[in-house]
Length: 75
Image 1 (spheres, rainbow, N blue to C red):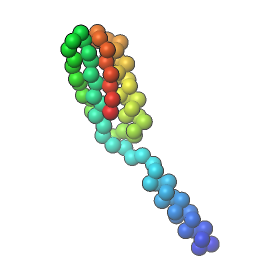
Image 2 (image 1 turned 135 degrees about the vertical axis):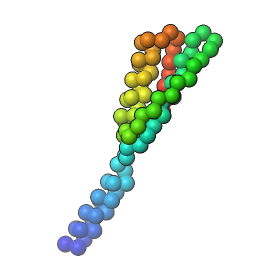
Image 3 (image 1 turned 90 degrees about the horizontal axis):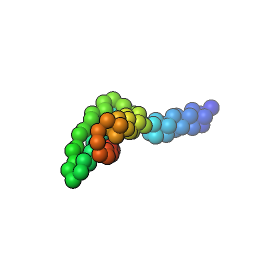
Image 4 (image 1 turned 30 degrees about the vertical axis):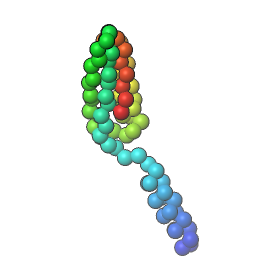
């Protein structure tokens, strides 16, 4: 019984170590128009890493659909 508790506790600890926590992220977007470029930053607050990446990709998609030139965004 004691070994089972130890194994369970270690498993939970290991799981907690590999889970992602919510953090604040900055998405930086660069739009190239002709020979010039414009940088814009977006704050993504209290998000999981995967959600922050999706939000950043959404900013890129929106910019590419509305602005001339090409826009790339990254966290």
